[in-house]
Image 1 (cartoon, rainbow, N blue to C red):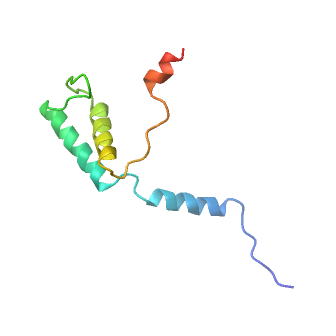
Image 2: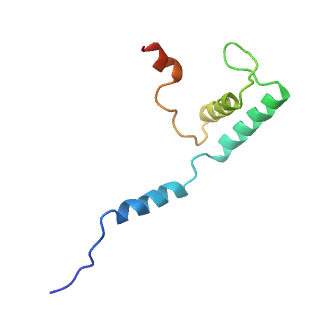
Amino acid sequence: MEHTPIQKHGAAPRLAAKRKKASKRYGSKASEKVEKSMHEMKRGKLRSGRSKKKVKSRKQAIAIGLSQARKAGGKVPKKRAGSRREKSSKR
């Protein structure tokens, strides 16, 4: 009669979670684009999409940089499901 080691429940998911965290979420192209858009914002040169209004928000500058990286084929996670505009219009 052989004894097999008993695995604790939850041991495997912890290892998978560690491996998932180890991989980089954003690629180097994404960080370059965000850095460039932040620099442009600080200089007052960054403009938003269609309206071409000057970007004043740090969050908006980051979003523009990530969007540019996505279009350029960089490693960037998918957008979050639903934006504020979509959620507020459902009321």
